[in-house]
Length: 147
Image (cartoon, rainbow, N blue to C red; front, side, top):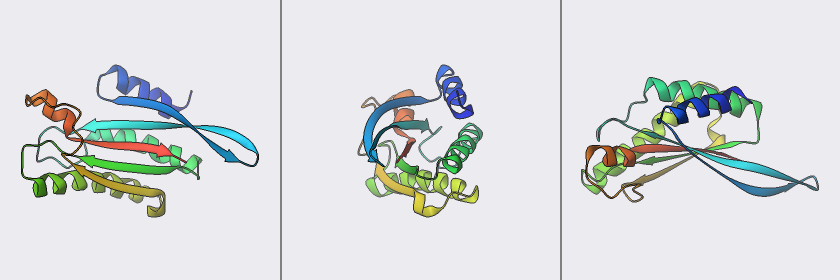
């Protein structure tokens, strides 16, 4: 088990991280390689927050190592927001979160050509409830490693 896998498990057990794993097949040199699509979701404390938490940067350090060890991996970073502000503000917050993740991994040596950044604003909520906990689920950045 890699350090990243151990870290994912510890975060998952602490209810800080949601991990979804599925598979796709890619043909390479006449072999079928199954690459897990792993999505990591981190919520932000309040609507205005776009700064990365210590827990998220610690996790990103493991992601950087995984990316450095697997030169074919691409990192897909998608920013989300809750619906507590107007559309323009929500889009700014969501892209701010995604860009902060991208800047962090670039500073650690991951080339920008290995990053894809998307902005969903409030368009893909996890929860449609308006209590604090539900809104926090919608304020997130999804980080997906793929080939």
